[in-house]
Amino acid sequence: MTIEFITAQVSLELMKSLVTYFTQTNNTKMIADAIFETLSVQGEAIIDTVRRVDFESLNKYDLLFVGGPCHDSDLAPPVKGFLEKLPDSPKFKLAGFFTHSTYMRDSDGRNGALYDKWAGLCHVTFENTCKNKNIELLGYFNCMGKASPPIEGFIRQEIITDDDEWNEYLPALRKHPDSNDIENAKKFALEITEKL
Ligand SMILES: Cc1cc2nc3c(=O)[nH]c(=O)nc-3n(C[C@H](O)[C@H](O)[C@H](O)COP(=O)(O)O)c2cc1C
Image (cartoon, rainbow, N blue to C red; front, side, top):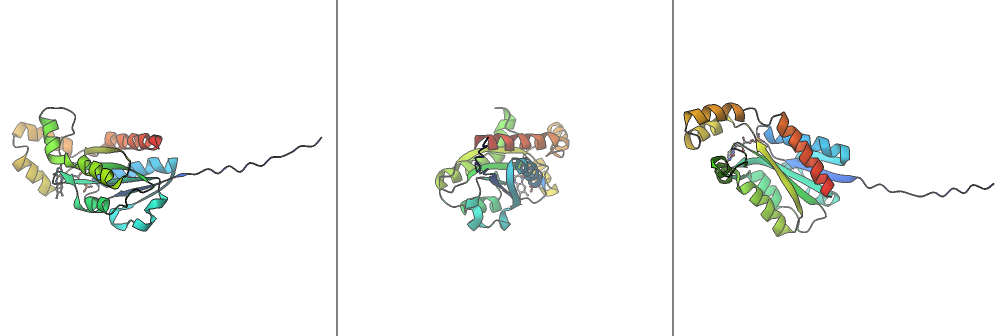
């Protein structure tokens, strides 16, 4: 009896992703690390700061996660600068993430209004960049991040001036990013990869 072996060459293309971020006090790095951990299980993943990214190599990625802190209601300048330098109509798709010290946008009331005023430009910047550069934006993630002492002082003086509100807000803010934020960031990363 002759047994014929047919050799089929199966080429498994692993998803290639880059997680790149800017951070000053490590809040955004914690989220970047959580996203990176999830992506590493899904395929090939690299993590680096926005300042170290080689723009020539970007087209080898299927997916870019770009993140940073919110500064002055928008993404911090190094992240905006990075987004501005992205090529037009690249091969990769993009997902964004950012941390901020204002409330989450979980209601239409005062907290939602404060979010819009103090962090609302972050997603606008992701959306506009992707629209202008013909990049598919797959979504974005955000969570609260503890503030440095000068920023805490600014918030106390300018935004949360009521004592009772401050006494509730500050201890809660100082816990972020918390384990829940980390888990949510991992879930977000997984959901994004499922969209590819
Ligand atoms: C210069 C500066 C400006 C900031 N402006 C805002 C702001 O407009 N809205 C806000 O919600 N948080 C603001 N923050 C707080 C940061 O977004 C927050 O602490 C963030 O989690 C810091 O992330 P990082 O640790 O990755 O640097 C500001 C922080 C700094 C240093």
